[in-house]
Amino acid sequence: MMVELKRQVGLGNAISLNMMNMIGVGPFITLPLVVAAMGGPQAILGWILGALIAVCDGLVWAELGAAMPEAGGSYAFLREIYGRNGAGCWASFLYIWQLGFSAPLSIASGCIGLAQYAAYLWPSLSRNVFGIAHLHYTGVLAAVICLLILAMLYRNLSTITRLAWILWSGVLLTIGSVILAGLTHFHPALLAMPPGAFHLTPAFFQGLGAATLIATYDYWGYYTVTFLGGEVRNPERAIPRTILFSIAIVAILYLLMNISVLGVIPWQDVVKGGNERNAIVAVLMQRTFGPAAGRIIAALVMWTAFASVFSLLLAYSRAPYAAALDGNYFRVFARLHPKHGFPYVSLLALGIVAACFCFFDLSHVISALVAIRIILQYVLQQIGVILLRIKKPDMPRPFRLWLYPLPPLLALAGFIFILFSRPDASREFVYAGVIAITGSALYFIRARKRREWPFAPHAK
Image 1: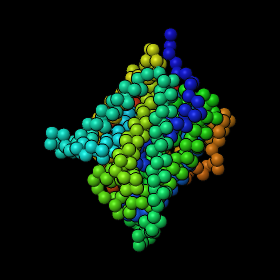
Image 2: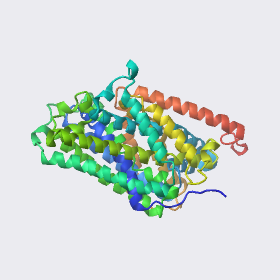
Image 3: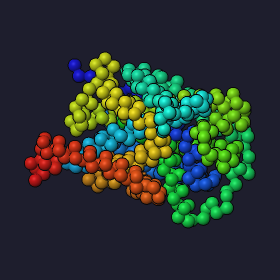
Image 4: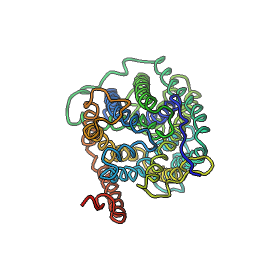
């Protein structure tokens, strides 16, 4: 008997999984990077611009997710937009291929962040392993955490959603504590802007681009529910609500948290190196409520990072499964666990690759992740939602994005700004180019053998 996915995720569970993915460890470890990028409290502009891009892009995901509530998210969208029997075969295959790199990068970033806060509690973790340069015990810990989460997800979804609520409570407690500490010890003078903060020079836009790239990474996750589209109850209503509620709540929390931190710790101290920079909210709690509070919040951030990686790995494991089930990816990924009914091969593959990426530098992981996603996924979707409106105007759309076509055009403009405004963007373009070329080569070799697009007889 064939095992199928069941619709057992309600609106509350979907929002909790989405927001766990979005908040995660990102804002707790990247805040110093954002401030350093712009050189002062004006870095809050990066968070605001990132939120605006997230809203515009989120509306695109909401329309597509409500219209095509299937497992796999973008895989299903790209396949239908560009033609199930046409270029959509290539676009959706390429998306899954890049996901095999970008999803583990995203998962690894959460594990690395968790390990950095662990180093605040146990500084010896920052030492090199056996004296090997660039190989720290934090990387080993990050990989171990990744494998532990993989083991926890090796069970049925109903058990996982109950566990998600427990993890989610820790996420709310963590960010709520940081905001409370900051607001109760707030010094407005610390938010004074340095001279020339808003001079519209090339350096200003380069800094804004770098800050927005990191903020965009922190907002990402609002689309998690679309990867679980085949398991969401009443998806036509639940998916758009989950996406938009998540973005609104998280944007408010991020802005409050950043203002709180910068109102307690001078921005010059925020960007200093060492374990304090890597665990900035623990430093905040230490300065406001003492060393014990700092250690407690560090532990809570580790909890939050754990919850985020849990949600990420759960959601992303559904995409290769959906592609393989559709015959457009390696068949082994279509296997479901015979007892618990989850895509265990896909889960194992992404989890193991993510554990390997845990030994990379965090800033490089984030930059590579964002560039690869924008070039090989988001640009195709922004253009695609417009093409789908033109090609299939009568297609049922339970949710229609507001102010069409402005949201996809504005999101596209924001992503292009992120890509081209930074002086060191060429490295990420190389990563994305290599992945696109290898993925396309694999697809066209297979397509020629199977006589599929563009080698199908009717395509000649």
